[in-house]
Length: 538
Image (cartoon, rainbow, N blue to C red; front, side, top):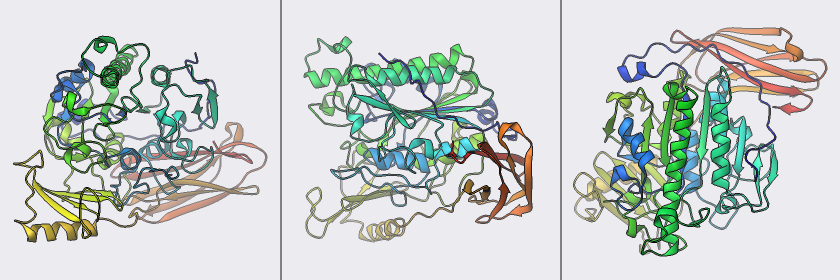
């Protein structure tokens, strides 16, 4: 059995000289500057499938302990009611009315990210974090070097499945490690491999902070676990249901192992763990979520825009966070700006997300006027305050040729049973107008540090895609072999939307590292990106 990949893409970069100002609130001050991050993303885990949110038949002690020791967001929303668009929202900070990937494959080609998709991994990697994605990526194609590959979107290491369909195989013939395939021959249980590699990644000694994105495939269908169903083997349930329960408890044990590794290595105190699920529970290949009350009081499940399809578990944990339950809504497009806020990196402008860092201790959270979900040609939903409207396309979910709009008061009807659309036509009209205005093209500016090569010349370009002016900007290039900076380009300030470039002449081969330093609000930032002259980005 292969316990860990044997090849690694080398990514040059040094710890940025980033100084995060002292936090104003106790919870913010409790987490040291430049924290590590672990994002655990379950696959199709329902809001009610963890004990702390009412689950009675499936044991999840480790996840429940995270919630008891951390911050449980009881009103957290995924980016979509199904895999690919939800993950795109999580990674890029855009809701599915603006994001690049708005649909699952649905029998067609796997949807892909593009060069302009700045992910939270790219943002942190630029500022000096070492980054890894271990598990299910969920965007195609299966080809290295193209813009949608995780190595191109900010992950220094990738081990797992690239496409959605490949991730349905619990005993795959191969997995990807960076630009190549690791042959497995269908003999190794993939979630176990992911856990081992994640543990090794946490243990790696480094002076740099880390981001570990751990998108496991548990408990997605099919309901496959090594051996029997463990404590559920003799329950009077169908085989798929017994094994689904075993998958959830296995996921719980993986969470326990990751947290234990943080404690063993002394990294727990400076690490923030986010535990979440990409959408509501599935009812595939014989699994019946009603048996487990997988959504508690919520209506429907995966693929639906009712609360059961999009309201999901979200827990933030760190030993220094004060335990609490937060009921104000947050959404997965808020994760990118939250990580940027905690790491002290300027967030990109034009995204839909807002930082929820302040909610860790009951302070300010995202001031969303409304939240939007979009399933092209199927259904759309909008929540504004207590009101939620769902618009079904013609012929979808029993809608007639003119479609159908439903309206619910979530304060009094969390289960979305009483449709009030006919009683509040003016409110429905307002929400539909707002929904239409909220869906359109990508609103972001370009952002980041880019390197291009032409012959013996390397051009370094810094683009300010944030909402604040960057001051005392300086570009430089370090030559192969550790030699000093070749040349320098400076600017007093770089306004939002502006860019600055410098071109350097480079002789010979080897890794050159472009860097950009600048200041915002008294903080110094350094972005770095490496390029292997005559071979390309590394």
